[in-house]
Image 1 (tube, rainbow, N blue to C red):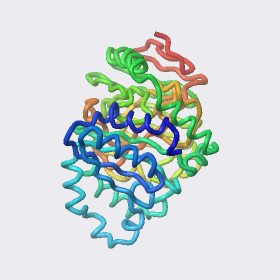
Image 2: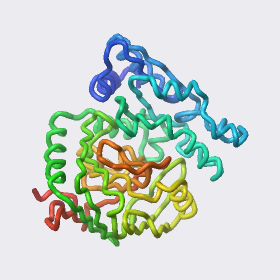
Image 3: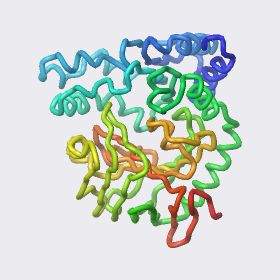
Image 4: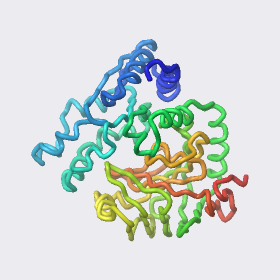
Length: 359
């Protein structure tokens, strides 16, 4: 894979477009040892822009899953000062997802998972507020290919098809969609066993055209925290979070909060996550998938939430730049497919049907 010319193009895309690394910057680069070819290319690209690459490699996906399982609970609740200082002072962050096992961390018991999520929340405060450039991207490893039901070669092709796009052209289309939503006050989404209404009054959407996640390809909003009402049935795709899989999730919202939650499988984990803290039951984000290069479900929310013709509902923390104010240690995107029978209305006007725009 290291000889593939697309690898250099991919790394350059992350460094130049997603982050736009500037001279003298300290760029935090996190991944596992499995992504070495991409990590080495990223170091080269960062160095060529006269910046520092602060490399943090682990044996697991994105960190040490052993430490939070073994350390005394009192210590688990306290972040090391060095980690806090690093998070508060780096100029940019690149995270490469390359797990050996996609279920790493799922053995952490509920009490420890909740404490660890709360303890690490400050590390992501600047990320959620978009106070520093950041990007999360994947590297083709067998675990991700297997999770998607693909061979490694097939997965690699799909990854590059989804990422090596004409982002300027797609960005113009995303801006067109954003502008239409920004003129609206109310969004209603109808689909299989789904009918939910939310308010974006006074809120402004954001476009991800390759500057935040990779792949990008979405328009997203911070709904008014008290104005989401209705039911969403995530019948099409399982939702994966923290190494756990939940199938057939169903959420009922009243005045912005999840008041009922059930699932065909993984219901206990769903409810435990929603009970993580006061903000975990609030709808923190609505996203509209628009990436034409992603054509199938991959059991990877970084890709699945961008499928053109889908929407995703994120319970938990909002992105302040969207106007959202909800705070939580949780940010869980659950994807709803609208490509067969789904509709989106803006202030009563049909703007999307069966995944196709009507304006």
